[in-house]
Image (cartoon, rainbow, N blue to C red):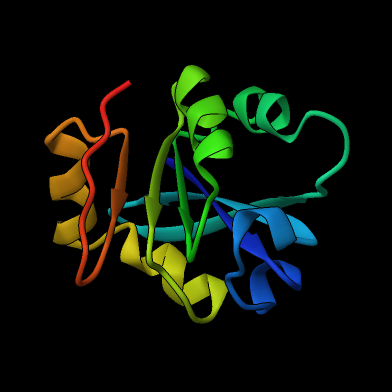
Length: 120
């Protein structure tokens, strides 16, 4: 699965709210771990860029409702409430909690104390 995390400094940076990202770190996440692919700069139509890269999931501290809807229209799922180093957030994509959200068919969910389920 291709996962994107908005970052303040690529794969070595921290996860930041989507709209404040200096780049989106994209990686292939699977049973064998995380394989870094590239950092997409937030230029032009970023949602279209994520779609072209085949991104299936965005993990971020925050994503606006408007952006979440745009991503959902491209078939990209959004899970928020993740913070810390980008590489650590990417590893979270391998955890059972994230897989459970995806299996439940959630398009958008807040991870942590407050959870929202929005199906578009």
